[in-house]
Image (cartoon, rainbow, N blue to C red; front, side, top):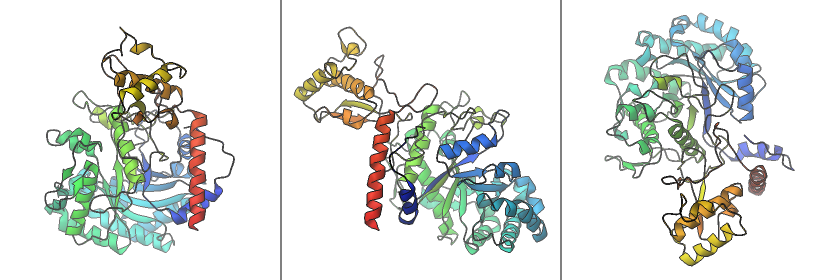
Length: 483
């Protein structure tokens, strides 16, 4: 991540923005089933550097929690499933709150306590202990004067739904709806909490690849999927999954509950039968997920309602069992470099939700441009523009097809990339356009400098700083004007 030194302070922007701008949030899940993971202190520094302010832990290790003391990082801590029997009385919960949560809360932000993870589907033997544990922990937090700042909930998988397609048919499994889900939903309403769901379009696609299009799972459908009952139109499987949960909640009489997506992501590697688990698809999925949250579009059932999502996961976890994909959900390498480009800070917020998987963009000839304008642009790019036009010379890899449009696209992109991906460098009298779709074909590979082989972002520092400075000045102006 490039850090720009600008000529003014951001304190005014940071002071004004929370009062005027509300929206969804992105956090990350921090699984630690690995023998090569970086120190938790290094992880805390990474999150601060990358402007990640929300983190989900899968236990309540005091050493891990304390590493985030004094930062603005808000934590979700978890009661592991196997420890639920230890929270079946108020006294047990009081002791835990007073010995773990209360001391930590003095220096560390804790937003939520998750009481178990996918208990009813992973460890059903503990399912009847979830609600008593939730109630006892909330009571303990109330006694410690922490209930107003720390919520209590429990995370479920999509597996608790009997049906999820079409979304309007969403309903909880009959075997658990009345006995398990309804009492928990009633309690979540009573304490002002929310429903947590781990939603993975990857798993849904892998299980039903004959019926689900990959581009739909990756937020890039050729055609939207329409719910035949409500006629709501869906451009992503995740939105359909979330709405299925909303419809299931409504069917149980709990339309007031909001949904927190407590896990979602895409693996970068898999077994031979998991070819869709790769870096390209992971980057595509997670960046489009970020844009969905940052654009505050909500879902078709709840348009405009902010989405709060935790991406799984910070790192690969080599000690996990099962298929290869289970060990490869990480966004960062253990040396703290990024595995792929991820627009965490939202530089693409407000843009159409379509990401090509690398963060790269190309400059090509506009389909509406005339041959005359393309010829002029081509002459400039290959002349005083110093573009690399060797590959479009006769006999070279990009010579065919021998058309103005094809040759101009190559020349325009060469000039654009050499200019640091500056948008102003992709104009050529209006005959050019920027695209996130790789125009390469055959052996003619169009260069793009947005992603290095190691997965780190390449940007032109001066261009990015100037662009960010302009954006920040504009935002401050608008905020001051609004006041």
